[in-house]
Amino acid sequence: MNVRGTIQQALSLVLLKLGVELDAQEVPLEHTDDFAHGDYATGLALRYAKKLDIGSRELAEKIISSLGTLAGVSKIEMAGAGFINFHLSRSVVAGAMSDAREAEKAWGTGDAEKGKTILVEYTDPNPFKEFHIGHLMSNAIGESLARLLEFSGARVVRANYQGDVGLHVAKALWGKIQKPALSWGEAYAYGSEQYEHHTAEIDLVNKEVYEKSDAKINDLYTEGRAESLKHFETLYKTLGTKFDFYFFESETALRGRAVVRAHQCVFEESEGAIVFKGEKYGLHTRVFITSSGLPTYEAKDLGLAEMKKEKVQFDTSITVTASEQNDYFSVVLKALELIHPEWRGQFQHVSHGMMRFAEGKMSSRKGNIITGESILHELIEGARERAKESRADDIAVLSEQVAVAAVKYQILRQTAGKDIIFERERALSLEGDSGPYVQYAHARACAVLEKAKGGGVVAHVDENASPNELSRLLYRFPEIVARASREREPHYVATFALEVAGAFNSWYANEQIVDGSTSSPHKVALTDAVRVTLRNCLWLLGISAPDAM
RNA sequence: GCUCUCGUAGUUCAACGGAUAGAACGCGAGCUUGCGGAGCUCGUAAUCUGGGUUCGAUUCCCGGCGAGGGCACCA
Image (cartoon, rainbow, N blue to C red; front, top):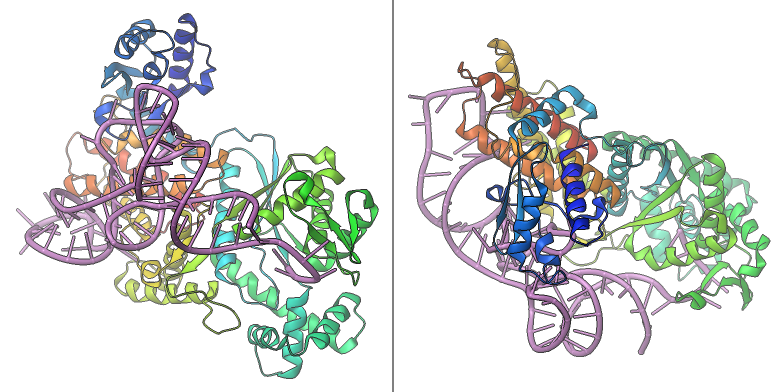
């Protein structure tokens, strides 16, 4: 058992003797934010003092004396109004260093999701349209979630669901027919702009796509779809994502319509359309099949759910989308639950905030759209400029790695559900609270290790070395990962990575690591443990960790 | 109108009901014998508002103000 567990267990037992029942796992125990307060702290005594009719400081003292000594804890003391602070023993801090170095790529893994299969659906761009910023966000969050779950022991299946049919496709096809010289993205913009003047024509194209009734449109469609999908693949490669399965609306549409028709009791007919009355459940009504008989996105999502189930035997299916779909998802998930009660709770929705702009709302119809791709390219240019004096072997590769780090970190540093205010300059910045900052600290650690190797200094963990503000951070890593995975919140890892990188940079500035002294082997070992920790943090964020920058 | 989110330094974000609210950018002052200045050190500055619950509230509850999303054949 780890030290955290030991402390919680002991506290739980002491509380029981005092007449308070609290599961060991429920015992509040936090990482201190001031090392003067030790490594772990709990406010238990303050919480239960009144209930037990005793002073909080007095209760804290009582708990401490009942606790006796604990393995891995060097000192337990009361502080302030009745906080109980735990100081880890030197061997535990040193032990985390050894663990990190031995486990390498597995450092930080846990078993909370062991034996489970989890499907994660994310990115979901639409062929015929631009890969926009929302897709970038969904991709960054979804990929990180997938890796976090893998670190927790789950078998993760990555899926991508793409809208290859629907009105947007009809708009793009119509635009292309009118103006063949336009790119697909431009054709879509043109079709959207003209929709109100050519509604009937474009609606007809939509129907023809569903029914494959017009050979010319079919060919154009096939060509455009293939071109889009191929292009998306190059982006996934840059972003570091590899999907196991692709689902398409052209497949889910028919299935979805069939699902709805087979479960008439769940739906109602209204004004010629088939709708789901969500009001009974505190939700709202949504159309599943239109009055002209076409399945909507809602019906398609029901079809998708069944197809996912057939494809993989998962325990949980997570879908990552923008928060504007929150209410929409509640309705679809409710309908799905009524159709398949046996799958209750297996489908989860994780939403990301929306990208907003200081300069005002953008729209694909105006031309002021900033796509996910354009941001990536701007960043790559910026990184290339910066990399001119780099030591890296391949500047082109490095520029891409740094650029991806910059965008992804920008997205993953904050709570997933909140909107992100996009500021071009900040996003393009490679300094401060950023992905490249963490990458830089990692590259520095690599450089130091390289030097140690050249100087013949062999890393060695000294169990008796006194812990410092850097080494005392490392043992927290597996706990941070577990929490981020449990709460589906990658930002805990991003915050931690920054903290470790900052502590390392600070330490580095004040300490000669490879200096021939007797403490050098230990300092080299600490550097190595930091290297492993930072690299794994970056991996969990879907960011690469170059050895040199 | 109904409903769901969210209001923290000048700006962009942290803070699982706890201790002196933590970073980054900006601004001001510094850091050249060293392993990488994409760096380090110091300073500057914040919980929208009024109640309530609590030993303790940025966090939970209620009201107000402000911003954003969603609400029938788009996705």
